[in-house]
Image 1: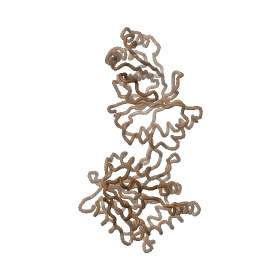
Image 2 (image 1 turned 90 degrees about the vertical axis):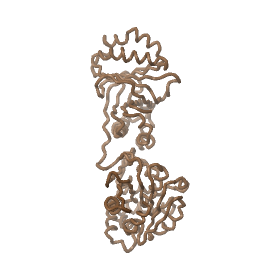
Image 3 (image 1 turned 45 degrees about the horizontal axis):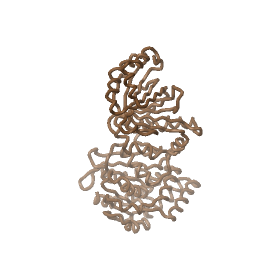
Image 4 (image 1 turned 180 degrees about the vertical axis):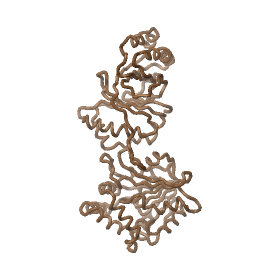
Length: 488
């Protein structure tokens, strides 16, 4: 599929469909998500105006149909929100069709108060005669009907519930736009329906369908906070992109309970003085969960976290990055990103993390959630930061800065993220990694330095950072930058 086109979806709610929930979901989530994509030019909902079923339709103008095969669009269906799954499960039918544009007559830009959709299926051998009649006679006569605004013509490229027409046949769709008060059924309309040429052409039509629709609503693009991207299921990814736009990009991914400011000093060096005589552009973001995502968001898992980064890069129009660097939960994300999206990065760095969850850790996460619930985020922050930092640095400026981050984190988001940390195992996928990698661990981070040296990921080296714990970039910045520079 390529070139401009038209996406049409017809929905018949079922007996168990909550109409209020249906319209709320479609008007505030489903349609607006699509309008946020630059290749979806317009989006409108229509309601039946002819007493037929399906009762509802949504139509979208697409600048280039090739985008509909790409992940930035297909993920809208693959990663449906929990609310979307619940509502769609009640439908009697959903019929989705895609058409390529053949022609447009009329300067009207829409949305039309009244829309008439006429589909006709013909043998391919008869298409030239059909198109000639439509362009040279039929549209000319339709344009004389009072209230006519525009006629667009399309050919089907992706079939709906009934599939594509048989081999050697093509389904043609004409969309006629009218004002609310129009002359359909009047003398001009009857004249267009009663010519010798039309009679001759209609004898060759294999199948025909006509639907009349009344405009219901025009979608607006889903609003996003400044410097944020909202995922398809409603999770917020707040980001900061800085540095020379021509420099290679390095992405940094945080640990649980922290925000992207744990990388402040690292980002400053890479974007200003640089390493090895080279500067870099830095993209930092808060993964889902630091700020609470919407109730409709899906359970947090590492596949979803890796795909969140993919989506963020796509939304920022970044095809490939020089490296993805992550620590703790972010370290697992960086490894999984190399597994799931190998074509989008040249290198990965994983700091102070493991390749699988353990029963002992799962129990510990449950205890930390209860601590946050019973005594608040300040109590959780105190215990957590003291565990992350080595004892000599418990009162350091960076420890205090990290404590504030944890105190400001969402407890519910934290609980969601522990769902990922309690349910992952990347071991069987490690052999697929071809991307060069660097593993880093603070020498004071318990058994992780020893465990990380046994990951067995090919083409990967290991560096230990002395006098540092779980967040080595915050305890021994110089040693961390030296290890990073040697790999970059």
